[in-house]
Image (cartoon, rainbow, N blue to C red; front, top):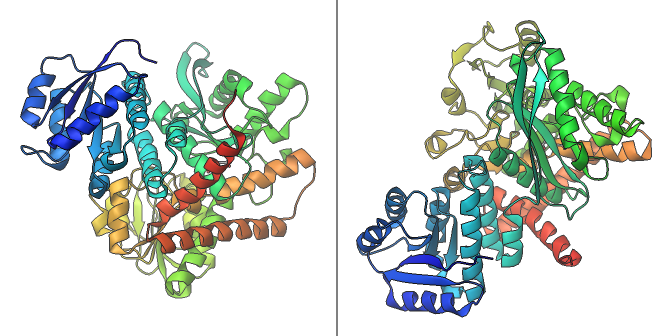
Length: 549
Ligand code: GLU
């Protein structure tokens, strides 16, 4: 609740809309505000120059300024002042783009209610207070935007929409670890974010990377929620991360860092609470240390506190390769849908870590010709095909792909734009953007990484008819076998690899066909369809549980 009157600037040229908004604003007693209304952008900018506006309600189409230009000029005049877009139903896409460009929210004028308007204002003001802090990252905005787009299509209840836009729990820690020379103590930042706690324990990996921040971890946690719900797994989404470059650490340093990070988040994890797993920069060994640290604290072995651990410690058969295997199951199903003969198809795989290398291997087993591959060190191209075994042998010896003899070295951009049937993304976020989406030459874009495609690029891919296996579907094989690992752990029994792969395939294909059907029925892209599948399930569960107290 806000105690002071909020100073609102309404920039809207339609007199009827202006009056409507002003009436709605005064109708809700929860919002104490003073409103000043202007009809031209120039007057709005002059008003902003006086520096006493708390929030701008902005119509993007004005007599003296149009579309995104309007927002950009407001942001330039008053970068700190949050903006909420007022849009007509026809311009929702434009409004969504405005949110991607820094506006906080958008409201559709035609069916606006006073409670929704007042809530959006109150919520925006509290988000603005968090901004400038670490929430504000491009990845978190992308995750929120994708969610808002899906919410708009499904006409999501506004109570639920506001509730799901931010994670429920966030732990930010800073902690020290000794470097190997024992004279230096390094202090790093770590995070654990739990997005939705209504579905069961929370689930999601831990990422070690030098660019990790709260916004990134929160985005990944939100995606985990939709992913688990899409797969019908009994988990909410979570994610963890430490801002550190793991390649700069020795194995002993990595162990000390992992144990201390585990100790810092120990109160919020556990087999019934929140179950970590590997993600970028972490692996089975890191999970083993995490499990050991947790078990030492409680006094007995607790294998089910993490998944993706070594098989000898209670890890599951098939977990290590599950993300790549799952992606290839889905590529096969997509190829069938598209009428693409995989035994004559070509593929490019971006990234050659766990997900990329297994994806390449399973694609090769399906008879696909691998013409391009990359890692941090280089891109490689060979129109006659690259041998996955030879690539793996090279990496085993040299750690990276650079220097691989039987290929031409190319840049990351060139790799993404190679002519191929299947482009599998298994590296970082933010790869397919408005800049290059027009130039992609694949028929099928398969996302093994989280968040590799920006929102506006999605529209371009959809218009171009490129079939997308969105991340929350494409890479869900990992968390699905993690779920199997957790189930085996709490029941103290083990499944065979055949059993695991068969169950994995059934779950993934079920989610694939539900998503495909929804996309076809509603004429929407696969990502939005997958999100709607996930969001609907979470919504149903939340409504059934109700609000405490
Ligand atoms: N980090 C993986 C993901 O993004 C796996 C998470 C898990 O297995 O819990 O889906």
